[in-house]
Length: 365
Image 1: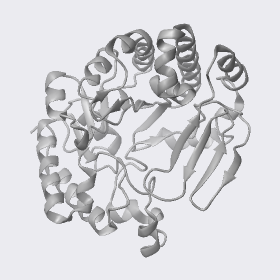
Image 2 (image 1 turned 90 degrees about the vertical axis):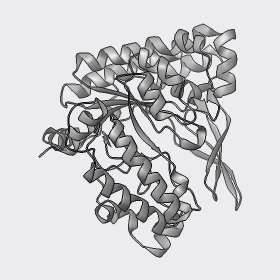
Image 3 (image 1 turned 30 degrees about the horizontal axis):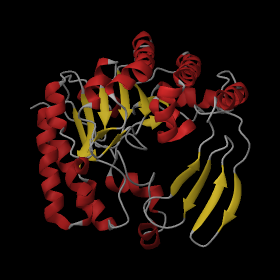
């Protein structure tokens, strides 16, 4: 009997397996709708057992380690109304937090505008050996992970993802032309910190994947040019791939919303071998992309919004899931968090049907 961990790796890397794992990918308890918990108190605590999700969290789990800036001051509330709250994060980011709706945060000021800004943050908060990065009970986690049956990731806040957190998309676009050395310094320093931190963790635990959060595409395609990708991002992905290979970590996974059809080619060439969530509404062609890039795997690729439009719409996505499984190298699931228009009954029906298909369809068949 294969474990969820083994099915995860085998499915995404095209190895023979009895079935794919049944994974939440997106949804509760990492995005519980208030209307659901009002009707079903305590739902986040029993949702995995109720719907029989495998693997925990998204289907793969994250070690509780600080891989961002470490030791920053507490968040400050600058002002507040009934509709929103304006806050300043410890790194200097100023954001508006919406109290209602599907999208809850909007950054209005980013912390890095100059080399001096970055030098200050780097000197204060980027030490990979800061003891606060690992939890004080790290040895307990090491024991927990030793004989686990779930996949476990090393986490990277992204190459582009970390840049945009520091500078914002617009500031970053200008900096790639006006101050390329600053952009290189940020990416090289951050990925070096990650590699040092991961090295410490890999002395104790064998990991299954490295996940990088990027969100570097819109509905019409990537928001960075191929040339800028090759100059600033690809070298760091090659470093990540080299680390993965040296530590026998089979999967380098990128999380990017939007249309990632073209971006996938450059990602794969730089060492990424799995991507998600392949948003249907953004025009992602997951089958075409996988056919064009032998060796690439995918997660997601089912229209999340179907959960809001009744059984017929859901059944259409479930048949799509069957087709994706038969293609191979895909773990089907919703292509992002559920939105406020989704009733729990729709989500439950979607997941129950998806589980039926996953349990009875051999990948690559």
